[in-house]
Length: 275
Image (cartoon, rainbow, N blue to C red; front, side, top):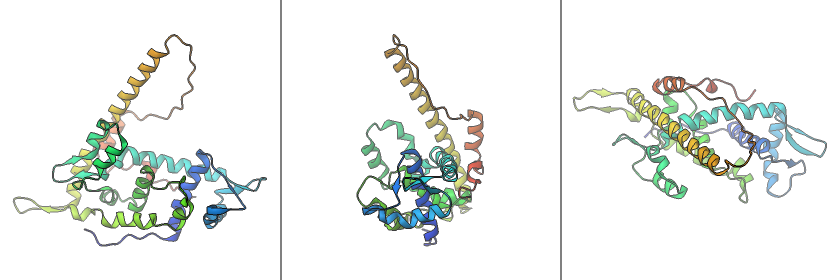
């Protein structure tokens, strides 16, 4: 295992907290009174920080509201987060001995609790930090996105405000980074006594992960098409007007060049989120 070399500064905690809170305020939408009461008082320093960065303003009702600049932060982050879900999340559980990914069975689980139990099996290794190291990305941000996807930042339970700014979640995040296999941990000596570098091992892992992500994406689209067909059959006799939110789709050949090239990094990771 790698030595404990990851730590998180208060400035970084504020930035991650800003991303979480801004997204909730823009998309939920959620707002906070300037006269913070109860547990909301724990958010005072974070909200002041966001106002100073011009991500929030105070409206005529004395409530914090996202500014145009704040909304742009959310847009940039969401693009990066979507790329994480499509391309990085599958590396959270890999069986190195068998060369298997937990996500190969993703669509076999209808019960979320059973899926979570499956991910807890001891054979799985979290390779997200090693992938981030290989691609020269920030492991702290990668694991933060993983926490978001796992709903580790719950904003409906009592005391979530304290957890967001001062809670042990940030210790958990750095612990994941420090305990996960690092790139150098993947190196090994083959049967002929040759040393295989962690970088070479990672190239093979990324190739397998890329192929898996393509299969998962195709399976998801097939399932969505089947659901659309069922809806049309059920409502064929009714006139319906459906307004869809359409996102830009990337052609398969572009995705395949992305997935099969272990050195490729989407341009969304080069964009500065906090301007």
